[in-house]
Image (cartoon, rainbow, N blue to C red; front, side, top):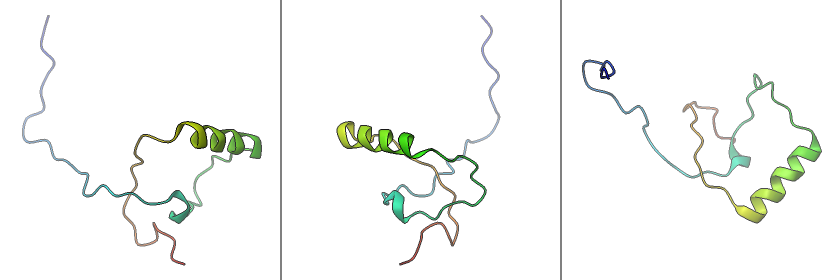
Length: 69
């Protein structure tokens, strides 16, 4: 079996920082077209309360990423 082609040069890690923030502190993106009905939101909230959350969200670092106040 033929080996997959490799990319010449060094692979850069573009993750600059990993930090934990409350989802409620993130600013809403006006371009996000995904809107979930209240029943879906309630179901997800119940699952997260029961099981918890294990994962990470990648976000671009922008001046308006985190809501102030």
